[in-house]
Amino acid sequence: MTLEEKVQLDSLLILALTRREFALSQYQAGVLDENIWIAETSIISLIPSAERTRAWWNLIGQSAFDQTSLIRYKPSSKIATT
Image (cartoon, rainbow, N blue to C red):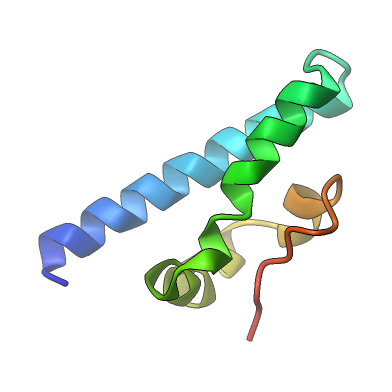
């Protein structure tokens, strides 16, 4: 992976998880309905599904995002930790 591709992947994953954190706060406030929240959590479960994104999570993601709060409402989507 080139440096440019790595930066693009980092940016995409940070954006994706930041959006999910915002969706979680909306869901907890009652603004987001449960069906939409379930759809949002499907994005979270993609992160551990590929080797590159698992590596990203282990190097960057887990120090920047609280995995417990992100997966609290969907126990089946576990993010691998080291």
